[in-house]
Image 1 (cartoon, helix red, strand yellow):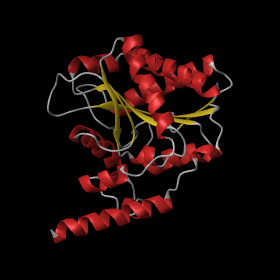
Image 2 (cartoon, rainbow, N blue to C red; image 1 turned 135 degrees about the horizontal axis):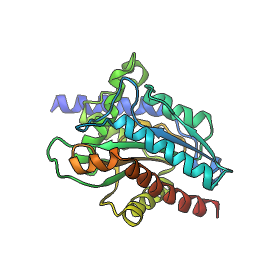
Image 3 (cartoon, rainbow, N blue to C red; image 1 turned 120 degrees about the vertical axis):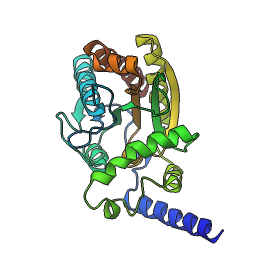
Image 4 (cartoon, one colour; image 1 turned 90 degrees about the vertical axis):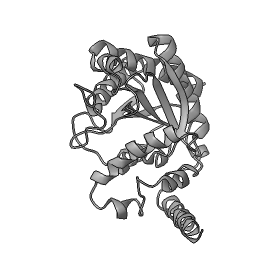
Length: 264
């Protein structure tokens, strides 16, 4: 009992420390109009992300991110499109969100690929927003994506002792209320619907989990799992140019619907 109490106190202290260091900008201090979007290709460089039989997450994420940015620029030249990375380089989690904050972005879209060791037949897309873990599966995804910080120098000091292997730390992190949750959920819902209508993909729905890269963003933000590299036919789809363009188009149409809504 004493051990559990100590863990809860430690996690509470962690949450308070993180909140102090990474305070978010109030939602009403920025215009709702979408003028600048930051597209984040997950992983990169020494961090390959998850792997399929023949392709790495970092490569799929970068291809989709660049294609999405191209589509946004072509359709809405008035929108400033920025990338956290446009080549195969390693970018620390903290720098990704800090880059978006420095550039006063109105939207942050992080592109990823999923995987599960339990099955080679799982299909579908998932779009996450910052929030509570609803299932063990959500926690598993958050653990995997947050484990990137283990490759960063002095990560314990940078993230105030956050342990990506601790379920309690993730749960406490996810309890932090985002000022932008409503807009993030709106975009996430549009993305999942477009995956279904544009590319006839199976949607696993909008979910919530404690992602460090989202938690530190001072704007609406989503993390998109575009499919499972652990499933052979999904890997083939995500490895193909047609598949990557189709994924980007689905996200782009969701972005356009979101922008229209927010601009109005």
